[in-house]
Length: 276
Image: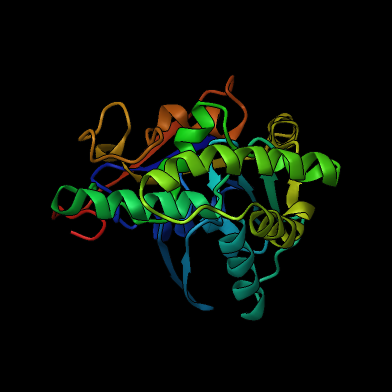
């Protein structure tokens, strides 16, 4: 198995994290290629029980490199806390074993706010969002109205101006919900604080993966949620906001020309979805 994708066949919660950890010993690189911290991969191994939301499930294996691809939506604050929690438990996380795509979308605090406000507005018609801002973050990505990890390397004045423009635009929506306006300076400080944690890991993931492929290294692509949550082929509109299928794995990872050698589908004998 050179290049393999592990995907959920149901609605998510099939135990993909456990299976990624199980198979990770056969692979040199594990790549998360979509979704954000709405994922909850629980891994139990001799070191203990770990719940991973953003980090690839291979992060627990010392011989495995881990990549967060351009298809992901990354909450910088959550990432900082997740990295700190694992380090505190003796899991080494360095730029050598964790690499974040410069093209990945940043999930901003106002994305979380917007997610919550919309679910509350819908009431009993709510989509069942995890309220972590993933859908608004993905939506803004596709209308080109958000930050990507590469923006963290802008000159401070340039980055701050981008954030002020985005906040002014987002306030048109937030105020419409009856919420007080988002504070641009607080948002800038949030990006500055948690962006500093992420910056050492950000790199050209496409170049890294192509080098790994040229060197004959085995790559596993890890999905979030399940096939029935796919934005195009799932139970729309009660889906995720990205493509959860194996076909998207090379694209969301940053190597769209790479073919998969196999796909492993994980399913369970009973049907549940997140929160239901």
